[in-house]
Image (cartoon, rainbow, N blue to C red; front, top):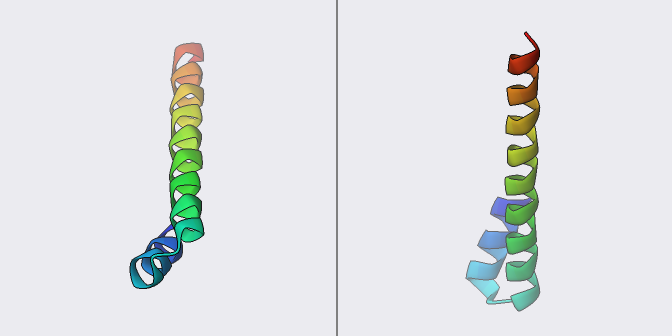
Length: 46
């Protein structure tokens, strides 16, 4: 989804597509951070 929204923005210059791209990036970073935290917790338990 993120790649599509960037390509669409690059072609059209549509601000909404850029905002969708940024939102998808933010969610992806939050999910990565949460995954890393969960892995760290599991390693501490072992």
